[in-house]
Amino acid sequence: MKNYEIAVIAGDGIGKEVVPASLKVLEAVAEIHGGLNFKYKEFPWSSEYYVEHGKMMPDDGLDILQNFDAIFLGAIGNPDLVPDHVSLWGLLIKIRREFEQQINIRPAKYFKGLRSPLVNPNDFDLIVVRENSEGEYSEVGGKIHKGEEEIAIQNAVFTRKGTERAMRYAFELAKKRRGHLSSATKSNGIVHSMPFWDSVFNEVKKDYPEVKTASYHIDALSAFFVTRPQEFDVIVASNLFGDILTDISGAIMGSIGIAPAANINLNGKYPSMFEPVHGSAPDIFGKGIANPIGQIWTAKMMLDHFGEQELGQKLLETVEEVTKDGIKTGDIGGSFTTVEVADEICNRLKKLASV
Ligand SMILES: NC(=O)C1=CN([C@@H]2O[C@H](COP(=O)(O)OP(=O)(O)OC[C@H]3O[C@@H](n4cnc5c(N)ncnc54)[C@H](O)[C@@H]3O)[C@@H](O)[C@H]2O)C=CC1
Ligand SMILES: CC(=O)C(=O)O
Ligand SMILES: [K+]
Ligand SMILES: [Mn+2]
Image 1 (tube, rainbow, N blue to C red):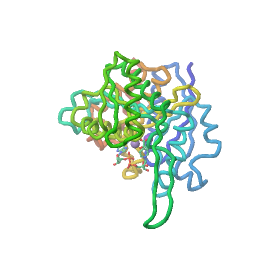
Image 2: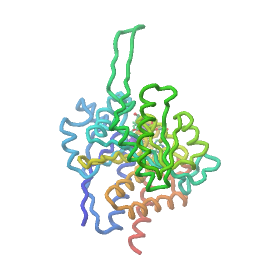
Image 3: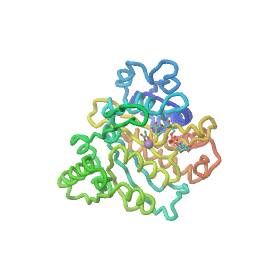
Image 4: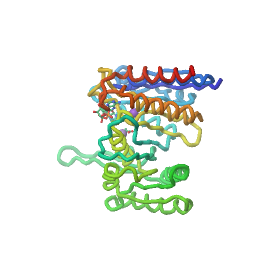
């Protein structure tokens, strides 16, 4: 029996709906495997926790999480209770940074049974490798003066190590896929960090002559994600550019509600964290209509991370079949609830187990 201990942080908003639904699916997956055992420990860390305790997680929160094999997270953010930069930096981004989860992988593909807003979705299949530890998301900067003289300064941080690490990961991934890597830049407008990004890309690519490369300014690239996504294989992007691109790649699949993400710790010192691309969606929270597929596909990425690729593939195929058969939530044109979709996926998985 292979045992995995998973820290579960549902977080805020629809995180509290899609996480429990997805845990049921993980249980069904363990059942069809037979030799897998997941042990979950749930943590109530969230904006509500902040209101009660004045912090997003206890002071020893990271020490507690460190011993788990993975972290399974829903979403963080309830701006009515806690400003977003406080809640995200106090939990989500804190874990990403302190646990050296330097890469955020976010796949998107034409998904069976989904109504992509594209006229010709043309079977696109891409992965964005987002630098996850630095870049535009930094605490370097500050505010001075008041009133009309008020100034806010925000510095982006691009280290050679961090930039090269993201790029090498993306090149290795491209080698295993269709051998094409695109870099997201903006060196025409951002005069220090982005020319640096380009020069590191040009250096690193010499080590990967078998990978075809291209570089696009982020504004044009965002448009190409909409007009011709089928031309992309792997895309490497800075923290902010990767964040924005992956809301687009979610949208062209049919809904951000199905888009998955994996925050990967590459050095094995800390657990990796699996969460959907989407946030806490306060506009639909409480209605039971959130799409659980992003969270379930994230569970598939966790299975891949544990070396259970075959099982992960079976899970994703089952999700696609259920979608194709019309058992889907409102955001993708169905009328089923979060729980109904997850239950149908569980039932089909259990049927697989019994044959
Ligand atoms: N990784 C995280 O935990 C993230 C947290 N956030 C936080 O989430 C809160 C809301 O942020 P927004 O900008 O509104 O982004 P969002 O991703 O929560 O929602 C954007 C839109 O997509 C819809 N949507 C998202 N997930 C869905 C799902 N599973 N099923 C159906 N529809 C879905 C929402 O209803 C909304 O209309 C904020 O507090 C924000 O800071 C935002 C993005 C990521
Ligand atoms: C914070 C956010 O939007 C993300 O990590 O995708
Ligand atoms: K999330
Ligand atoms: Mn985002």
